[in-house]
Image 1 (cartoon, rainbow, N blue to C red):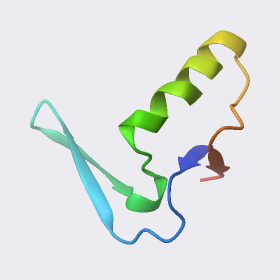
Image 2 (tube, helix red, strand yellow):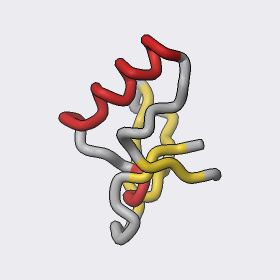
Image 3 (tube, rainbow, N blue to C red):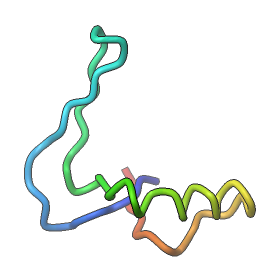
Image 4 (tube, rainbow, N blue to C red):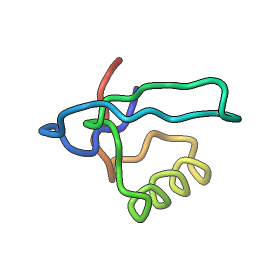
Length: 58
């Protein structure tokens, strides 16, 4: 499962780890950093997938 930030978002974002390894992620799965803390906190406290964000099967 992966979060869905914006179903209409187009394109891909590339993330680098240690400037060597990269991962591409479709922009539709990105959520604003301001919104990402609540679901993470909820999950850490309950160990249940939060309903405050949309989810998609990959």
